[in-house]
Length: 101
Image (cartoon, rainbow, N blue to C red; front, side, top):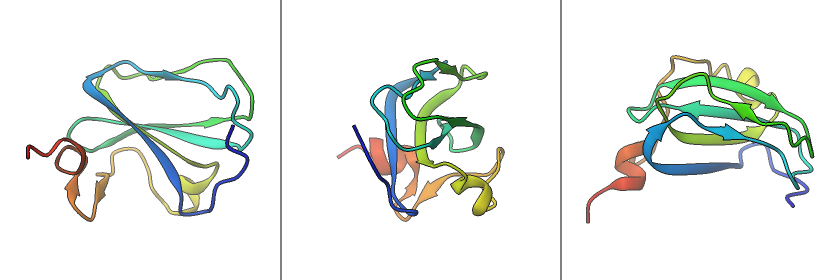
């Protein structure tokens, strides 16, 4: 039920294992881009998604472990393209979210 999202806000979805993923926009009122990301960090693909559209948007790859949703057009505006490595200030996505304690 998100009704807005600031330019530098996003939502990340984590999966224990890589696989084919499929997302949709049920109850989402903001146009988003859905980015499918491999376990080792490369951005695999980006898909535009329209508000309240319940049609699934499947990944082409079976290597998706992370999904990042940003405001529609964010990836293009920031020149972030498939093949680029996605990291946080704490390191890789694996290190950031699955670090052993």
